[in-house]
Image (cartoon, rainbow, N blue to C red):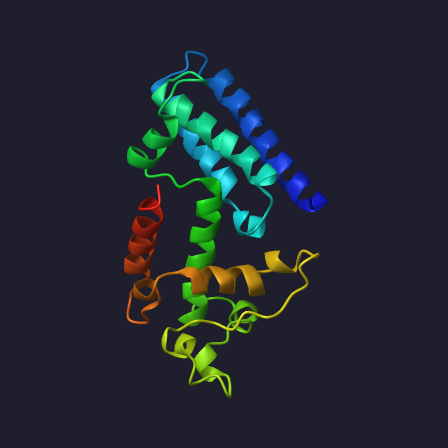
Length: 198
């Protein structure tokens, strides 16, 4: 387990709990408005910079998932062991699980890289298979797949953006890699694709 990831996630969880204490001081009656504010604040804290958690061990992302589940329980006013929480999160709130949210953000970032709206240092790591000499005849060249650089299996190389982002893009279906999709259409279809797996 990467120590940096562990400390990052622990800091996010402690910030969420600190904000919970503040909201309960301001709204001691646990009003519906305070609960909704708290849940969306938690989701914003969890979403901020969570792309660095790509391909992280489950033990890391599960801590954030528990905070997200707590946010959902606060909004719908259920107890910890009530059943059907994940179904409500997906159907009512349209919230993705933490690992899927990270993949969603990576895929959107890859879309922006391929359409020239991302920072140049990220776009430099994206090379279409069709642009590599000797690979134009491959099937992946016509499917707008990207060349994923090699990495050592026993290192954290698979968590780098240049590997995790490109791999995420290559795993998307062909319909989502269509260059003619607008950003809003891409996001909507991507979220539909991920929700279909639930």
